[in-house]
Image (cartoon, rainbow, N blue to C red; front, side):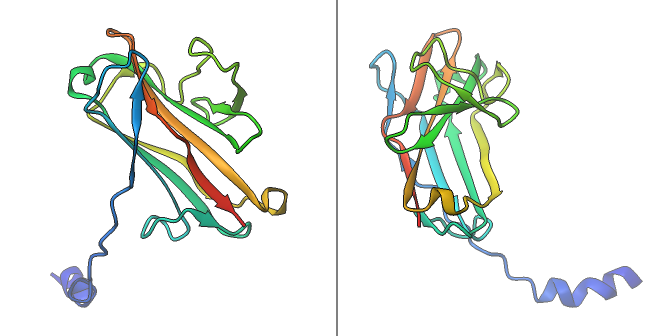
Length: 168
């Protein structure tokens, strides 16, 4: 009872914060078929309370993605993929340790960001967490693609255009 009395004022003063939904990106599939999947990517400077398309080199940046898997692919073995690079300078991929790896620009050369496992209805990815770009990235744009592959159907679902983050 004493513990409740200690926190009751904190609880009474609590106002939940409304966090905006991540913006959805246009998607494509390797087969050309339509898909009910959706992929959202966004950057934040304030811990996800708001999203932005531009950051300063001194900002602490988080970059997150949500992948809503097409119902026909839920439960299938598969993987999630992240391609990242500076606009106009080629793309690298993030492996499951979050390390950059060369990408040979082929589907066969993709390395999963997550272990190959059963795909869940909603996959949440933290691509960057509290990252500071530094002056070397000034006046650049970071390009990010996210995709998933469903093994049984052989389908690759990916963002058609990159998410572009301006670094000032």
